[in-house]
Each structure stands twice: as structure tokens, then as C-alpha cells.
Image (cartoon, rainbow, N blue to C red; front, top):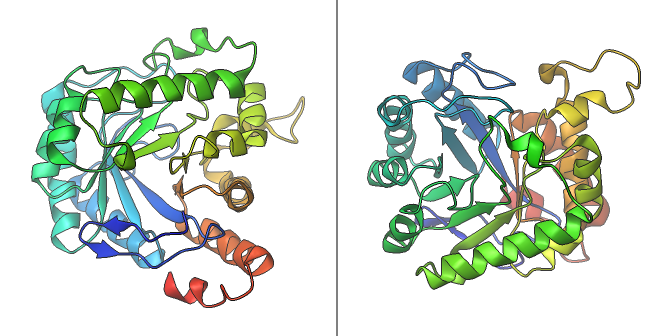
Length: 296
């Protein structure tokens, strides 16, 4: 997006397409694939969020439910217990917080606690009340491509044309959500890398990312530490562990610059910020110099 976005009442610069925003991941879960349990206490999660913000994250995405393949869902009360203290504490110090949830009840409580965005990996499909909550709040809503819950989503990774089908299904969700009262300009698309997709699907979708951007809405890209990045270049060998995938993630973040995405969602902010800074200097349009400083 070339025009500035208002984030939580403030502005984060007038960023050219060569400078996506960085969304830092704050997992308050015991079972996330990359860092499950590491930031599980509210105190640890809050400290981690503040660290990501200091490192350059523009938004902090707080989630209390793991969406790794095969994950079981926590009870609503447990999800609320995990995320609300973290959302409240981070919002209280001025951080722009996104609540990562598929549940309308959790979204509503998090918005009341200070969250400014709702990031729903189901795009509003998992909870029929979600669209109404978001519409009433008037907040930005991340709509991810989704075909089912983590416990069985990989069985639904069947496509004749993954890029085309993702675009069609996202368009259908946009139409349904606007019909439910959410303003189109509040919607952000996410192609759902790794969700009901094989490694081959993920690569094809990344190569076709420009088609998702061409749908005309901001796009959030989330590749961070995902399994297909662990396997690349390791044919027949042992994949990289999740914590060793940050360089590969940063490469995809830099690639996202060329596609014109709005933001990248990452666990490690430093490596992605470095990659985006370099990409910005390489590809920035004449006269765009200084935009990197504006992100600081």
C-alpha cells in the first residue's frame, strides 16, 4: 500500500510498496510448532512482545491457540486466560496489537482490552458470530484462506490450480464479509501459506503471490519458520529445525517486497527487518529514500 495506514490511532509512516510492515508473532501457547511454551506465561509473553516492538515490529500478533497441523483447540476460557493479560499490557504501552483468534468471544474481549486488529486464520468461517463482532467494532480484519481446522486441514490440500482457487475462495470470503457489514477497506487478505497446502502448493502460491495482491486489498504474508522452508535444499536429508528457519523466512520476506504485500508476519523480527531494509535500498523508487528511516 502506498498510502499510510492508521494503526491503533497513530501512523506508521507513508511506506512505499518496497517496505512492508512487520507483524511480530507473540504465541501464548504451550504447543505452537516453532516456540510453543517459550512465552507461555503472561509475563514472558509481554516481555517478548516488547522486545519484538523494540526490534522494529509495527504490529504484535497475540494468539492463544496453536494452528499447527494436528493441533487440538483449547477451551474458550483457556484461550481468554492466555491472551487477555498480554493484549492489555501491550496495548497499554502503545503497541499496536492484533488478536489472532477464530473465536468471536475472544476477539470481542481482546478488542475491549485494547487490540486494534483481528487476525482470523479461518477468515470468519470458524465462528458465524465473528463477522458481526468485527463489523460492530469497525477494526481491520485479516481474512486468511482456510479449508478447515488444524486437526484435519492437510487432508483438504487438493487443488487443480492452487493460486487460482485461493484467489477465488478469498474473493468469496470478501463478498460474504462485506455483505455481513464489514467495510471492504477494512479487509486484509492472507493466502494461508501452510494451511491445507503441501510444500509444492506453498511454493506455487508464493510464485503467484502477485495474483493475490492483484485482488486489490492489502495482503499479509505468513511464511515464518514453516516446514516447507525447513525442507528446501534438504532433499533426502534432515530438515532444518523450526528455530533455524529465520534466514529462509527473511528471504521470503524480501521476495514479498517485489509482490507488493502490505505486511509480513514473522517470529524473528531482526532478520526480516534486515532483509526488508536491503530490499528497500535495492528496489526503492527514486525519491523514496528516507522511507527506511521513517520505519525506525
